[in-house]
Length: 183
Image 1 (cartoon, rainbow, N blue to C red):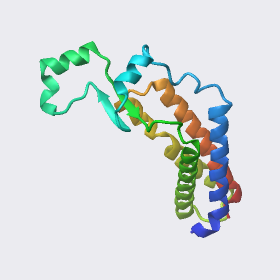
Image 2 (image 1 turned 60 degrees about the vertical axis):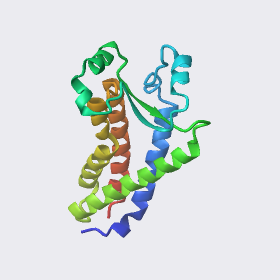
Image 3 (image 1 turned 135 degrees about the horizontal axis):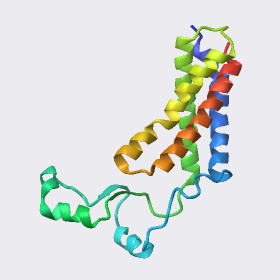
């Protein structure tokens, strides 16, 4: 078994690599540019949502499961729109806060990947096996939750697929660094 402490360098380097790679994916590559579209009447939607505190909302809202079969609720579903809305605090989005949270997440994923690999693969096995296991675990961590977003919250499957692809890139980077530096 390999000591987790001996993997501090691949943990740190893979977190930095994923952080940089994700910046390139979102700022340079074109595939996410059409993931978000404007509402048909944005001014009216903004007016309707003004004053809603940050949080998650449903439209139409079902306050009680007993209403599920009521004619009024069924009519709202048929008329639409049906959706999920996330409201964030007013003002400029804090990019520095989001980037800091993302970097902490890349560290958590890299630490988790290193833990799984260190407990399942002995030292001295070479690049291939540690790369394979590390890439797979990192890919799962960065990607697979997006499937439930598509299933339960209507995230477009094209967006889910792109997120899974992004996660594959992040997983390959994590696995490559771990495999390269695995004792």
